[in-house]
Image (tube, rainbow, N blue to C red):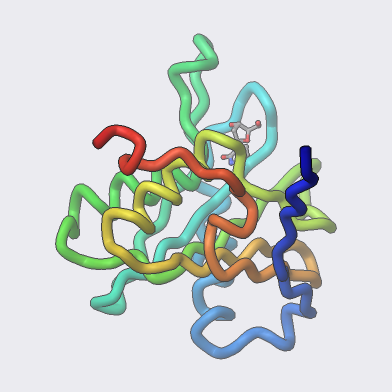
Length: 159
Ligand code: THU
């Protein structure tokens, strides 16, 4: 028997250290927080997806009285982007959240279902997706979903 260690590099930075492009994506996700529909959790989440044609697609969480019928911001944005622009690679996604009247102080990370969808999108376009998790001042930058979803299940297992 042997131990397999899994590790990954995640960058933590101040918002002021972001590149112009990343900062624009984060700002875009924050601007759309107001469009979240979160009457049950009161936890608004917004995702901004950057495509390789330069277009930014926004999505927010959309809740439902029958909770599993709602969906997270990340999946709203990615599915919309892939529906509108199926030929365009997803280059990056910025995620922000709002709770109790303000932008959260520590970044939230995507839920398991959203990680799996981001993985599928990376696989589909054969290109890693940069994930920028933003909070009030601090950000985390992840270079590929594989860094936070080890031992992935992909279509390779189905062939
Ligand atoms: N939520 C997201 O939109 N994205 C995440 O990564 C985590 C959670 C939403 C789902 C639900 O509407 C609310 O946040 C509370 O779980």
